[in-house]
Length: 290
Image 1: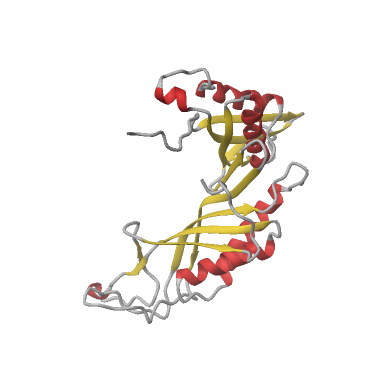
Image 2 (image 1 turned 120 degrees about the horizontal axis):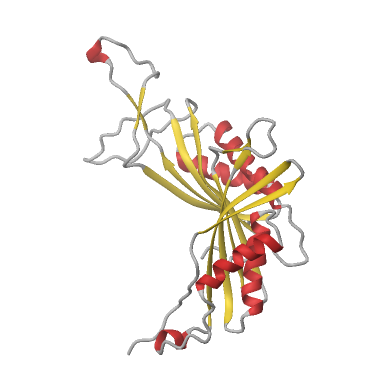
């Protein structure tokens, strides 16, 4: 016998660009929006009865329509708006997940209508709504950082396959993937999502820069702790830090010394350090991380 397990469906990676025009000073919001709906979907799987299915094409169209009717402010507000709409408007839908990646643009000089794509990290958020409660996880991806010193790695376990030498001074580099869970996302709770994002981003950068690192794990904990300190509404931080290895190049064959000046930046394989930092009184996560 087979039974239907957890399932959801939706429209992945809808690209929507919303231009807001205030005279000659325009503003751009460039988003990739993914929706996923779940609920009373047994019959469509077992018999092909589509009566409970809101087409994924409709979900895509809703993203575009809401971008026009509601505008696009903070990504978190737009994600919650969509998630609540799908659950509240469709009796068969009991849970909605909306994930957004935001692609940043900056003004091209003094021209109000001209923009340059930023080389910054990608801002992210995921919103869930089940008809009663909401959850939001904000974050960023590919925040590339590097320290040229103040990092060591030694005293590690060794066996017959260990060839890595210990070091008291190394380049430490990573591309930060970070996500932080908001403690209260009730409809009567106001949020300045943009301010929290900038505070969290600043905390990550500051902790990476001023932590004398004996391991990337130690740096991860310092970064998560700093976000919790700077963002009172955040209750949990999850980090994924690939170790972007920089190996000192042997220049002896060319009669040259290399006193920590020339490195080979290896892209793979790489160490991957992951972890979470939570407040002691953090509420249950529910489906927030799903």
